[in-house]
Image 1 (cartoon, helix red, strand yellow):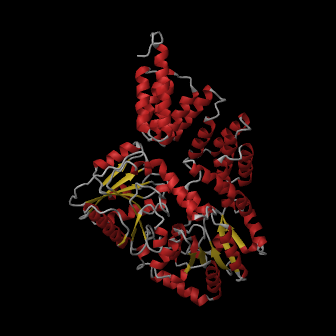
Image 2: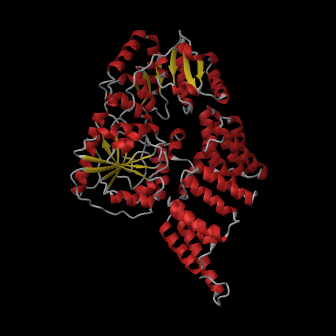
Image 3: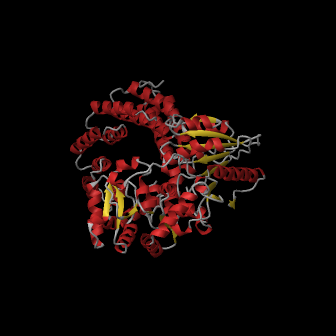
Length: 632
């Protein structure tokens, strides 16, 4: 027990400070085990040391060890019940557990103790947003801004709240203000760039991009995790080399945590496949729920590890073992998987949801793969394989990947949930002109780039009776699109906007004549829906996986006419379709006739392809072979 009257009091106090400093250094480097070891040593000398308890809780939180983090924090609050920062930390722990209501209570307690404690305002605003309390989030952001008007963080918080409410013009003003305060603030740069992209402010985006690229390169060079995420990079970066560096940069945060442990599991009667899934990836969760029952149970056992609890019952009831790992630390989750003696562990979310690379870094399975979640390389040494197709990732592109590639014979993803009858809809019901030829791109986030939009305008210029059908609720988006349209000498009547609430009508795109894909990030889910409703579609096959997915599906369905190999061919084919009604009708019929035969909707065949791949990589592993690319 620490005693302030002890004759060696100063020496022990110095030792405690030394241990905490060492622990913080280890923690900054991601070595949480050594950090925690030193915090515990400090607490042996002074069990009531609040800095040691708080930092230890932060360390546990970083590993998602929420129970241990709570225990440390309770001890810290017992020693310092009026310290606002401890209640902020408690709120962060509750946020990580998905308990936004309790998190809000903790953040509000922190402000009750110290209304000038500015770090809590962004956390409280984010918790309110997550809880659906948009007005309260705006109020908190306003209070933060009034308290700290010259804080870049306060300006960014206000910008984020306004962007969430689609008040984009005001949001941009606050991001710009943040950059006047701190011209190098990476969060302000990234959030401003994404907002420009979303609303179609392409001239402003082009002026900002050199700044974004330089700042991202600096963070990568300094081995600091880049603020720009790999998923955002797919929409913003045209440099594939920088995108690869960005993926490796984010993966590196997990690379040094656990040394590789070669666990040579004995083969049981059935191969144990583990799927890590997050329900935020709606399409993938739907696919998994429909596909688990299709696995050959005489050869395969399926284990599902859910990163949150909001999953359809079909997933829980269709797998061999379902485990909710949302409240487990990364180490505990990995230990659970190791205990299940998983042979092949498959990540289904990657950078598109809360990443599970922390878990994969523990090597809970001897073979670890990625499927679906992110259209690119994860850049991680802990992922052995990625399952894809030769069209999506040709050999030259695959050589840049850290994973070895398993080339599936048909499609990289099989559609699910397209079994319901297609209701007949009328254009008049949603204000679409009956007599016009309609090209469409229905995405509420409007993440198409300038080159895509110019190509669409060129199509409109060459097809006089056509319109472009887009989806948005934002007047700001409409204003920028109309401005871009005018720059191409086209009147605003050539575009029709539909409110995003219409997206709930799943089959709405059947009212169009041709669906046009985006150049900088193809839309595979939309192309699946287009195929199902019999809507002809066009895609430009690009140079990276994110721009080749729709082409991969079209090739598998023998719809090579849907694939343009260059921009001019894309425009020509769209114009030709608008001028050839008999060809268009024939294409529609082909789509409808192939619904029952195309691999895209043949989930049983896709699962058989996956099983063949799983069994082959396990056989190679048992033979002691290093991972290598192959074709199923």
